[in-house]
Image (cartoon, rainbow, N blue to C red; front, side, top):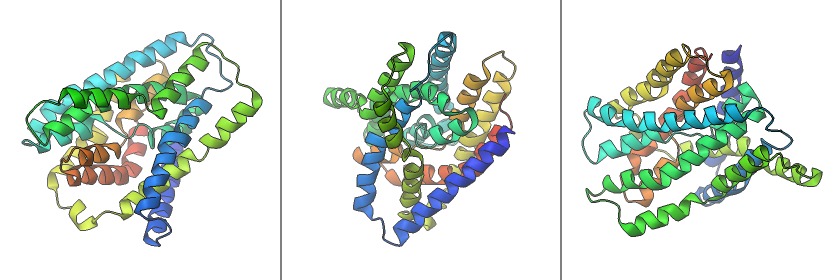
Length: 313
């Protein structure tokens, strides 16, 4: 049943990506409007969707569930960071490419793809637990992620100035929304009707706009160049199938909360985050490698995520 739900959701998301692809090819969207709409989605719609996920919900007896989820978030990122080292060796990668592949393994699309896919299985209430992943993601991205992008260009460590600026970037609207959502939920803070309606209205466009923009991003790529790297296919097979299936088989032997376990498994199945491309570009790294990983993994995830859903507890 869960597999059918996920498959239907992935078909809907794929059609939305096709719409975005078509809009860009028809020049209804250009690079300038794409960039501006991306900022609105990242800084307005997605944060409101996170807050909307906890409006009207009470913490009740879910504190144990929250603590379990927090532990799973720590395991999630620790696992990916640790696995990134043997993976680049297995693929025979050398500097500077190995750092970019490590970035692609660690930083998946937990927001744009994670929220719509996982909420379709477990309902909007799961967004609160996704918020913890987004918090950890942002902290790691703007510290360790920037370090990986920097060493892919130079063997020197990230300068103190870069570290200071990266720490400032952590406090972005998405992280602030996660913190607000957790406070509202944990403290059972009532949200007035008009405020709840406003948050709902602003959060609803997040999913369709996110997928349309991913489609528009795909329309900007040179498809001939995307398919000429054989190593990326081995990487994506490990990233999108082997790791989440292995995790599902292990977790299936444990007596964990079904939602928290399923969330962990599906998060491992998410495609490479598009933010990796932006980070590589900003640091002067080889963004074509990250673009290839992001676009192809998003495309393949339409098939691989429903496969992973077969292994959900």
